[in-house]
Image (cartoon, rainbow, N blue to C red; front, side, top):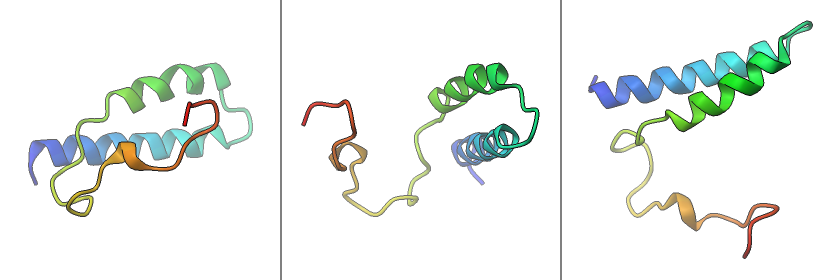
Amino acid sequence: MCSDCEDFTRTVFLLGQLDLYAETSGADEEFVEAVAPSLAVSLPEPPPGLFPPGYASDNGPDHPGEPS
């Protein structure tokens, strides 16, 4: 597996684990709020072939609070 693929997979896995932790009773919400954005921003470019050809992540639907 290429190093970018490993980094992407590892970071997505960690985000998933953090999400599971956040849903547990007694989870430290300050920890989750501090770590989640750091993990999300550290996501490397997705590995080649993950998305179909021509896919552009900025062509999706408008999100609340974003200008159309």
